[in-house]
Amino acid sequence: MESCQSKGCASKQEKAQSDQDMAVKGSLEKIKNKFIVMSGKGGVGKTSVSVNLAMALAKKGFKVGLMDVDIHGPDVPRMLGIQGMMGLSPNQKLIPMNYSENLCAVSIESLSASRDDAIIWRGPIKHSVIRQFIGEVEWGNLDYLIIDSPPGTGDEPLSVAQVISDAKAIIVTTPQEVALGDVRKSINFCKVVKMEVFGLVENMSGFFCPHCGKEVELFGTGGGERTAKTMGINFLGRIPFDSNVVSCGDSGTSFQEKYADSPVSKAFLSIAERMAGGRVPSADNKKKTEASGNHIMKFAIPLANGKLTAHFGHCQEFALVDVEAGQIKKKETVVPPPHEPGVLPKWLHDLGINIVIAGGMGQRAIGLFEENGIKVVTGASALDPETLIMSYLNNTLKTGSNVCDH
Image 1 (spheres, rainbow, N blue to C red):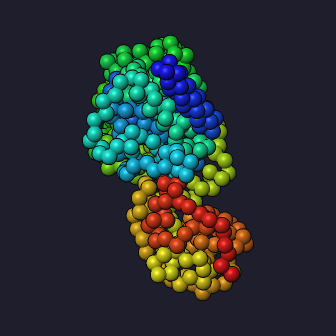
Image 2: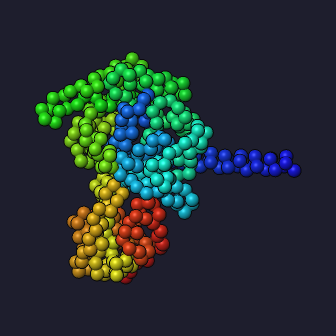
Image 3: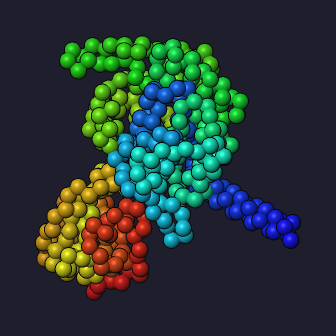
């Protein structure tokens, strides 16, 4: 009896393993490019580089996923200003947290009830979680998956190398010799596990005084480029030290939006261009990026008694809602102009709207909105604007048939 029970248990485990293998394979097949951001030691700004590279690629119009596998020190949600816990899709997969139309993220922190909970796990459990972060997450079709790994050459980067065989490494260092010594170990780690090294980034490379504009070598400069040349790998560029990067990361504010013309922002965009290798986002992605203003989204919802109404063209008022970094920042209610064909699309376009959530709408009207750069979501239920928008952002918005109101 015990032998039969043992065989039955083993059979279930094998099936579960096989199912997860298929799920992992299915997810990875939908992701075009995978990059793991590594560092030989802590304190070199690896997570900041991961987050800003993901933002730079998303800003160019690519669909980007950011996977935080730093199990013991997950900082990605804080740097993105993302709060709350991940939900489940109808097919029982985890839904990544949306930062913008083109950027979403997954982190162990988004599965924890408290940000201050300590994660005390050994290697096998961490390996299993990383597999789940790939196979049991609704990533969808991505142009890039950026993986933020903890410093060193331990369990997490090893698991990524084993599970994502085509991942390429971006190694982050600072100019000082102690960091360069550790980064050489990371490069050799990649050689041992047969992971391609895409290149080396020298972070905190010089500091431009905000008063006199003179460059000060806080940690030295040029060591990363020399190391890359010695080790035979690509040097991707230098990122200057800027205290505003720290303050933006702490507050969950996009540095590249706030300081778009800074040397740091230009450095990240330059590296992102090298990662893109001349590729351009699909027309659909580009259109969504242009409409969303990179990560500011403006919604319009027709209302009746404070909730969505199916009578789009003849509604008495609209809720106009601004969303930034995945959070509602502003809401106002406005009265639309008298209904005539083509009036509402132009009116909402002039107000900067890029997404309309509606109950029903005719195909001609949908076409007019699309011509004005406005995405239309139809078949939504009669709920309040906040609920509809947050459901949309979390990919849990339930839509039925598009029933036109005329």
